[in-house]
Length: 388
Ligand code: FAD
Image (cartoon, rainbow, N blue to C red; front, side, top):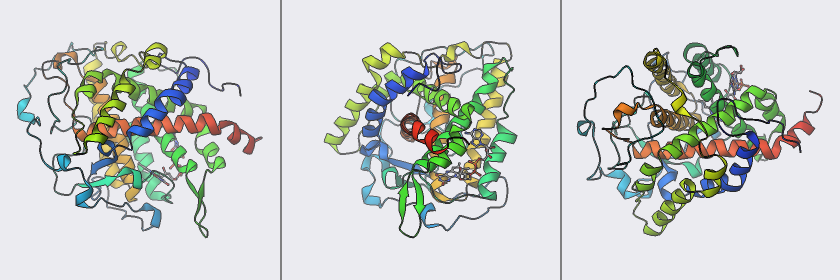
């Protein structure tokens, strides 16, 4: 079928066709393997927090909304104890703010010095507070249709778009201003595609499968939503590539040597893939941004908006949607942290929490799955919805 979207993905450095091929043949197979490894499948999350913005709507009691938490003995031992080489906020030097600071394409090559315990400045979650944290096996709690809908879900998306990431008109020339909306819209498209791809078609017989009409009505009918998905995919992919040294040196120990060797090997295959390096070496160019006088203030404003969006995840009234919402927002916050750290912070170097890396890779996998769904199901969707 003819490629429906062509040319460069907006504000990115790769075209749609290349992204589709790379995803299908290289990235998707590797990511699918990677997220099944013990290191990447256990996500630490606080699922029960009060909504900081309005009285709680309460959790939905639908069967498919519930999350199955891991029994303690399933969680990898190294995840439970603080490792000896963990960095805390005391290890970081205080840097003077430099208003002239700009983002460049490098990060500290000294790279990995231990998993950090330092909160992500882009997100609201206090991950160091372990009190109410639980571990969830992502493989047994897939993101799919849950039945969560109506005023509670609508209120969250409305609060995100209307109060925290306004859509700028197409004529807006400043790409920094448009980024947050495009990233959130891209993740929203991906959530909707996962709902449509794994939908409860018949409650009586518990039949699950793709709902092509829903996929069309929620996403494919709006080219902008599809484009934002591709943009978000390339943005997150760039963050992973930028953190290459760090990710290659990181500690993937889960106490299962054979599995951990596989995790290391898959990470190396992903980061050193010759096809990726040849076809799309710089998926997104963060060094083009933040150069104007008002760059630092604008970045600060976007960071605040993103933190609010992150806090809104505690208002999601469906446990499983909250889990995946939190994971994907933390993944996006991690990508923002990697890509938009000023180069004056090189003395500190990149510091990431284990959970941030788990979220980042799982988010990339979600986006990769969505792009594959669109690529493969697009023609069938067109056929089903012909004339709409
Ligand atoms: P919604 O998806 O709720 O969209 C609301 C409005 O946002 C639309 O009317 C449109 O104006 C705008 N919009 C929609 N898509 C985009 C886009 N890509 N870009 C820009 N604007 C857009 N339900 C599940 O079944 N499973 C889940 O895992 C799940 N996870 C969720 C996670 C979060 C964080 C939230 C807030 C909700 C989640 N939901 C989930 C609910 C789901 O997203 C929908 O809200 C619900 O299915 C109702 O859909 P809707 O048709 O009203 O449109």
